[in-house]
Amino acid sequence: MKLHKESKGTLTVAILAILIIGGISIYFLKMWSLLIIVPLLVILGLVFWFFRVPNRNILEHVENVIAPVDGKVVMIKEVVEDEFLKEKCIQVSIFMSPLNVHICRYPVSGDVVYKKYHPGKYLVAWHEKSSTENERTTVAVKSETNHKVVFRQIAGYVARRIVFYCNIEDKAKAGHEFGFIKFGSRMDVFLPLDTEILCKIGDKTKGGLDVIARLRD
Image (cartoon, rainbow, N blue to C red; front, side, top):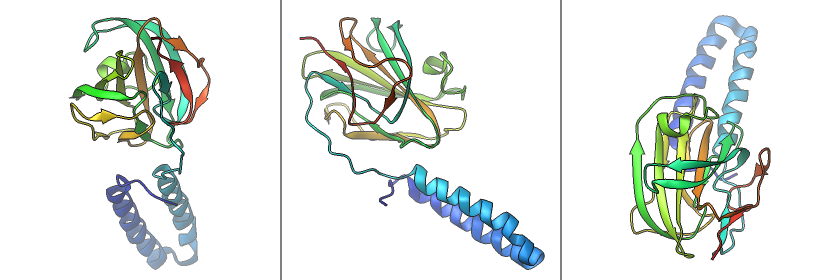
């Protein structure tokens, strides 16, 4: 199983902690140490699972808006995006549990025209205000269909580290990685009002594979 590059620090700390705690428990508790070691190994297995990188066949897309993450669609509504677009648009939000793949992918192909990191709070990721009050990043892409699409990584109550690798003037390719969020979070995508929405609340998404909307020419 291939692991994401962001796993290195977390796994190093986790393995060292388990070795130290396991060694101490064996020394003092003997056979009873299994009551501590086994749960720790289960947790370590979950950490490995969290950082997995699935092998996915990413296709080329022009009009299609691709699910940027694995998760569950929790919101589809008309809002005003006031950071970059400064106009009404459709917000599609996808919540990621700690068991989902947490690679963040471009939802559309085009040119990166804006990026910004925002420090903030750590409300639960499904809270509506988390989109504007939590630690987050905002990226905007001018799509190949000449639409401006904004998407936002949002830290949750557990997630405490967001990374994004894109830069302004980078070429965005729908379905390809641009960042990562650790341990439970949300992705918001802001689309033009006339976008054809192809997903519904409650849908489970596969990042890079599922088409959630289609931009109109």
